[in-house]
Image 1 (cartoon, protein in one colour):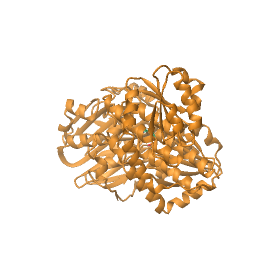
Image 2 (cartoon, protein in one colour):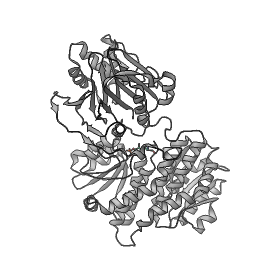
Image 3 (cartoon, helix red, strand yellow):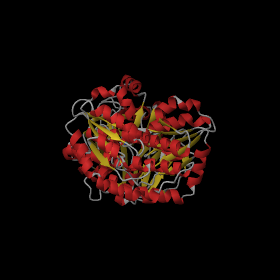
Length: 597
Ligand code: M6R
């Protein structure tokens, strides 16, 4: 959440277009406001910022026309301070000699602002990014050279964050990493810094990843890393990272969300190949098999995949795995961990603060920490004892789709490998089943969209294996359509929420093979009160006779069917979002990577 990007070029030039492009690449991290600042050789700072998305603000303020030798852009996801012009970043210090922007949370922001005001500084807004700039100003005013002032400032800033700052008095940018992601890039005639490594790759593939407690000094031809604590230089050779050009384009689709939904057959195939071939898998399986207690932990969509993973491990392998939401895990089950326990942390980005904080808290217990993640090189990857990648490529759209499928698939595959008896799942045909489902459920997708379009609310209900799918389907719907949709266990519906049902009220049921006899009762509780029941399930005569609409999935094993059921729900969310005039790639108020508690 929040994206920062900075550049130091060899000579003064038009930097605006480069900053706007970088802003577009970072837009998924926050789009409450955007701002760009450049510093010219004569020390002039040109700062343009406002509420809105990159292209709107660019059109209004002509960001692309900014000139300078150094520049930065910030995309904001508001936490401290309402989205406003004053709170938009970058920020100036009192005299306009320093300009900087941050990503993350400064939790002592309120106290700092009071102190800065008492010290006579000009504080213009309430955003915590401004506090980073004034914290540096404080030490510059006391006579410290810039590098030292930046290091000293971090002692006053509490929280997890990264920031970039420049002064009119030199030709450098300084950046700090304290808990939020930061990577530097080395180009031919410029250096770059970004909160998000992939955003650097169209400019250069030579990158240096920063670690917590480090600062970096950027000059046009080199980057120097120092330990924040004592300023001691850190030697780290740049690495070359491949750039997936295809991932940066929509490939003929109107939105990244649709492109990523249709990528799922290929991404699932890639993951299955990886799981069959990788030498990492055996060790991972062994840790899960021998765990005294096993927890699968994540947030949002990743948590829903944990629910499917735990259910599969329970049912197929007899392993009493438990799924948990990361912050709640930290406050409860983490207190019970001991060395023979295993926690699998699941995160697409590998940067979700709720996950990283829970992991950090659990570290001292001696339990093993495993990861399932999509972004190689992420903080989670470094924090885990071992990990498995999701092999999904870059996921651009804010709503997670292909990474959910591969997260759940990965756990189901592991559970299948550890199964006690029964016939192993035929995974080799799974990518084709995804293709078939995407193709054959389009009429059903229209039905869901038609039913939900005029409404402000609905429910998606699952049972057993499909609970995670129901929660995920409901999350996708509310995320990209703003229609309130609650996901829950279908047997729980009668314990209260049933009172919402009236004539024509739609309820979606997701049903795995074998569950129909139970689910049909839950369906009847809705239909006998005038509700409209839509089921997403494999062909089933009992279910077909009891619901108004059956969206048919291909016949397959229960785990496979459950997984396929998410596809029409993803497609319906997408379709409805577009119908309602919403951009599904950037739903309001959200950010792809949530790096605050
Ligand atoms: O990167 P993570 O998987 O850790 O992100 C966790 C959630 O923020 C994320 O899954 C979120 O719920 C999805 N973007 C929703 O589509």
